Image 1 (spheres, helix red, strand yellow):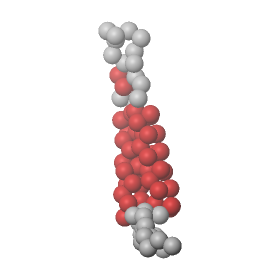
Image 2: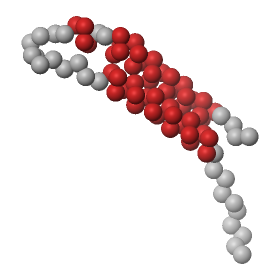
Image 3: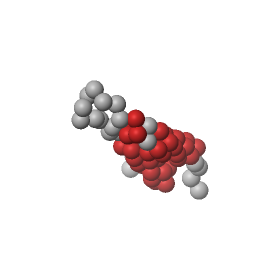
Length: 78
């Protein structure tokens, strides 16, 4: 038998689950923000660039993901 001390992890399984959920929200927000390329480089498509999805929904998803990450870090195990 060895006398090595038991290694305690900083986070438990539920913390990592919440971290993955937060990363998923952040990635979803980045995917929603992507795109907007025009076939004609000399034409500016205002409605596509400044759509609700890119200007409002995507940043909210990223902020929700960051809030979930903060929750996952400060959450204590039972």
